[in-house]
Amino acid sequence: GENVEQHPSTLSVQEGDSAVIKCTYSDSASNYFPWYKQELGKRPQLIIDIRSNVGEKKDQRIAVTLNKTAKHFSLHITETQPEDSAVYFCAASSFSNDYKLSFGAGTTVTVRA
Amino acid sequence: DVKVTQSSRYLVKRTGEKVFLECVQDMDHENMFWYRQDPGLGLRLIYFSYDVKMKEKGDIPEGYSVSREKKERFSLILESASTNQTSMYLCASSLPGTAAYEQYFGPGTRLTVT
Image (cartoon, rainbow over all chains, first blue to last red; front, side, top):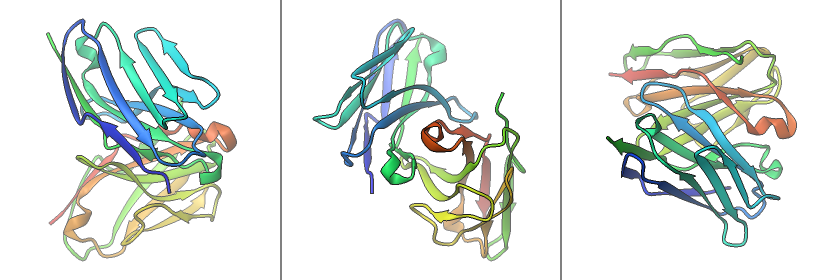
């Protein structure tokens, strides 16, 4: 099955700086890569996703890049703000895997004021 | 707005008890999932269902079973709770096909087995 590894496990950044989280996956058939954000005590929510036919996608201060050859994808948050503090999960999925999501272990991001 | 609700936010049970965790979604989603979330391990899939009466094992089904008698309701059952099942349990739902990729999560049930 799919194996998703996520790094780093914790990340502390100064407000206004950028944050980058990286994930690698093992199944070359994976073609959908979402990122979920989970604030303390709340449910995970989808913040951005990318499909395998696209190399980069941006939504305001967040962007995701995908390198299919190397089987890795990354989340970039620019101009970080205190409300960006949360746990972020990457995931991978494919139709050949019944669309199941395989999640990374999560990255706890802390934005210091 | 998609709403996924879970029967309890916090639950304390004793070793050996039978435990029912219920999940209800109101968006007519075909797909439903149960995950457990543990620090440093992310979200791990226990069971999933793509239709009423249908169920499939996920990555860690041992010690769990599920029931889906109605489209909107997906129950997770711990037949005989053990301390290693102390965890946060998250339910999710999604549409079928390629739309299945986006999953909507419930608020979670924090289960403690003593």
